[in-house]
Length: 305
Length: 298
Image (tube, rainbow over all chains, first blue to last red):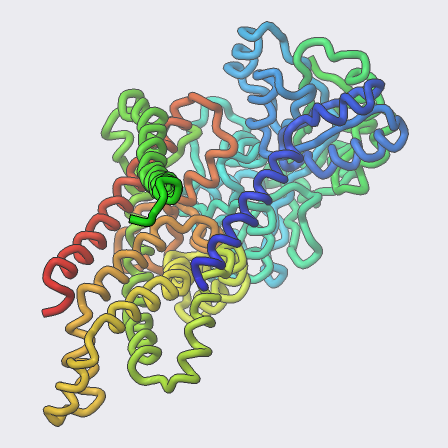
């Protein structure tokens, strides 16, 4: 009985895995059926995946001859795929590292970078936490383990439980470099070893929702109303600012990062057209998904060198 | 000799097919192990051994200390078995020795269904329901701690422990029970003094297999233990977050650059894990084997 069930389970699993693999892989049969169609393969950042999907759906609706497939997996996965030449566009929530650019050069292309939207990173706590705002220095001290009790930043006498995304996440890298290390490239500060590394955004929000000791961070688009978002100040006398499209646009909210798409060298015409659309008309989809559109972004540029 | 050669041929074909399938299972294990070695051994050459067996796991910054991960896995696995062993053996004794037939008919399939609950479901259950209870009951700063992981793992290894222990009890001849009762022992005394000791090597096997199940579990553990790579030392370690070997591999493998030091380090963890589970299974197999050589029971 148990064995039979196990066999059935195994068969179901294998079928599911095969089906998933089918989804991920390019579909040569479709291409044969529709010789006129052009396809764009896109892979990378999990932060960007919902937005990229929304863009892809809208664009395929407008241009039925184009097929766009979007998969997540993380910025590093997408960039690795771009270097190996298996995708047309890599989505990334961080810049390409010099060694990645070097590797792409070895394969014969210079990656081209497009900033496609901005993402504010919100620092969140339990709704019952009386703390309303922190300075960047305080957030850094909390995450390196120098501050361990909420009392030290004007809260209740409770231990602080640190929540972070996993180290493979672009959000983790950004937060480490720009908040924990305060943007100082020479700093070698690290997250405290007591930091809980959550495998998903949902893991962070579930813990923040139920644990009055917790502090976490995540993309603004992932923050639900049952968490309390903290206002952040650049320094002790600066204004405490809550993250929103406006405060990211005017540059007053300090923890905001650009989201990128990379192509391997000069893009093919149909990819170029798609990217142009994203940087133009596509921007009106951005705000609806909790990100900040480009037009009035801090630097205002569409591409960065 | 009425058998025609054709029938014997068919039999031969089927026999060899079964033999090939049997041997290929062993072959697959060997291939997997060779693959693990190929991908993991470079880590031992590329990373200093005091780094590799150090206490700090920050793979993005060249710190590959696997010690907190190994100890984290060990802590929650052992705690899980300490919780699951009495429960599992008691359940097996109840199902096998005490429960009336109709209750057994209901309980056995229910226990088998337990084994079929996907671990991600248990992980979600642990994250949203068990973790807050652990935090409030034990006054820990967070509920995502080793103990919560151990509770979920105990629950997951129960079906294995129950069914193997039950088989072991089943193998105790009826003669023993009859003899116990005939000597004037109560049913309780017969069970605890005669039947369970007679089945102890089978119960030990159950524990080993339960441990093998627990140490390799990934998803549920990743969701409830907090994944902080701290050294689980000190009395409060059970109520602090830990990071296990399996969760580390699962969380980081998706993102790591193919062929990098970090990639090889993750496979090195895989080798360590493989060796540990292999030793546990070997111990389980050897107790089972010894039992058989002794003619079942003493």
